[in-house]
Length: 415
Image (tube, rainbow, N blue to C red; front, side, top):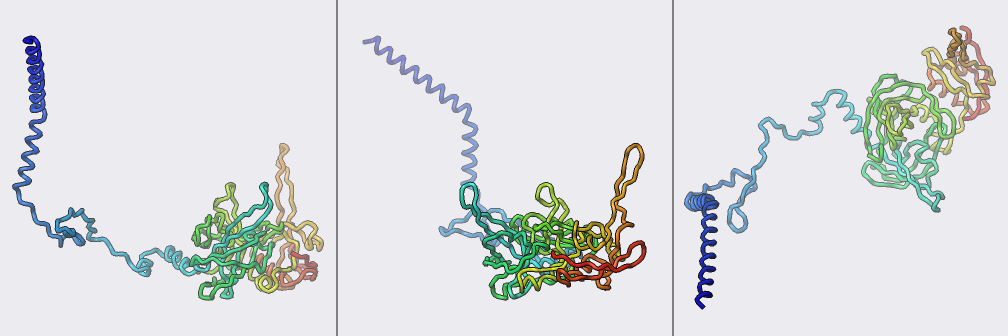
């Protein structure tokens, strides 16, 4: 019995010693921190709280329970910060070129529409529906919209989205693959239609500023700028014929821009964006537009008859000299070749050591100066005179050959 009592006493003494050591260690390590916290709490209780004036913080104040809220710091504007200005005031701050860009966009952007198409076909898994998109622009208040032929080619359904986001079904009433032009008709109120203004593409010069409006990648009414890089280019249309007098620019044109307007600095349409040259299918700085004069010549026929029948000389490529048009290439077997018009000849020159240089001898080419004795100096003037006549009509083509003018009768073909 005594042994058991002694054992219990020893156990109690051991636990008491352990507790004492533990309390000593806690006091040694945490005593100073507890003292500081107590002092801070006491100070907070005894020192007066400064009064907050809510007039210094607009919008801040006591909450519904009558207690004061913590007020976050508010950003204070700098003394020289300017308030947002009116558009006309901002316009005055821009340089002349920026101001011109803004004004042209404001004038024309409501004229540009987004065109979406749907077509059905038979695919690997049966019937399939494919869709496409492009651009166009309103040309009158009767609801006529101009776009590229290749935008609507083969489409079963065409829809036009106007500047206000409203979408309407459209009917194709005229198309001309030879110039890559199509005319659509939409039935909408006249107050939703903002027609463009046509310019004169015969007055376009290399180096002048141009602007392109369209819907690249579906991004509606996008403006890009550039210059005219070259004139009188030729471009093969979808039907294999050559579109002549093409305007080349360096404006950023991408998929979806097709059918949009090419504008001069006055906001007038001088062409319709049609194609690009690119290895990746996106803008590479070379884009092409059909000149608006070539389109206006056939516009009435497209609206009234739905198609164009025109006379054609059978000349594939010319070079404008200022005095006339040098014939660089003929359509094989075409009217001009049959009539005896001479293009530039390919010559060879031996340079020695087996090297041969080939070049075009422009001195051998006929220089076209008139059609039916009406002076022509540009491709536009040439086409204007030729396309006044129907296929099968014989026209007099005045050329200069070996320094002497002569008339050659050419029976027009059809293009």
